[in-house]
Length: 285
Image (cartoon, rainbow, N blue to C red):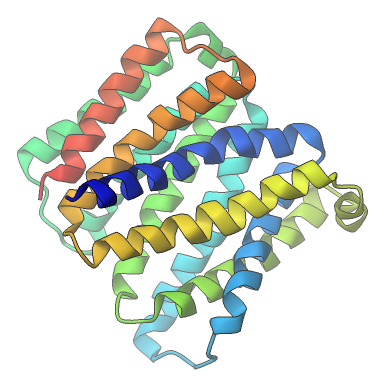
C-alpha cells in the first residue's frame, strides 16, 4: 500500500475511533441516546437523498435490504448509543465493539456457508477471551450493562455485514439511503415511546451537540465509508480490513485527551488480546 493510501486508511480508522468520545460529548450535553441515533441517520439520509434514484428492487433483494436496514440503521445505532450512555468509562466498550468482526465471521459461516479454518476459530475464541478478561476489571463490573449493550451492537453490526453481502450488486447509495431512512423512522418512534417529548428535546439541543450529530452522520458515516470504498478500488479486502483493528487505539487516545480517562492494566491486557486476535482474523483469508 502506498504512503498516501496508508495515511488515508489511518485517517479513516481515526474517524471510526472518534465515534465513541464524540458521541459521549453529545449524550453528556443534551441528547438522549436513541434520539442521537435517529438524528445521525437523518443526517446520513439528507446527505444521500439528492443522489437517490427510487426503484423497486428485485424480489431477491427485498429481505436482505430490510435486514440490512434494520440491523445497521436501527440495531447498531440503538445499542451503540445506549452503551455509550450507560457507561462512564469508554475504554471497555470501544474495545468491545471489535467483537463485530468475530460475530460477522461466525454469522457468515451460518448464513453464507463460508468455511472457517481452525486457526480462525482459535482467533475468534481468543478475542472473546479478551472480552472475558475485560469483565474482571472492577470498573467494568460496575457498569456491566454498557458492556452487554456494546456486545449487542457488535452482533447487529456483524449481522448487517452478512446482509450486505447479498446486496453487493446494488448501488451503495441506494442501499444506504434506504437504510438511513429506515433507521431514522424507527429510532425516532422508539425515542418518542421511551424517551418522551422528542420534538421539544430537539428544539432544546445545543449548537455544540448538533455539531456532534453532524460529525457522526456526515463525517464518520459518510466520509469515512466513502474513503474506505475508494481504497477498495485499489486493494483487496485482506489488505484494508486489518486496519479496522486500529480504531480502538485511536478511540482510547481521543478518550484520554477529551475526558482524561486512563485504561486500567486489565483493560489494556484484554484490549491487546482482542485487537490482536481481530487483526489476524481479518487478515486470514
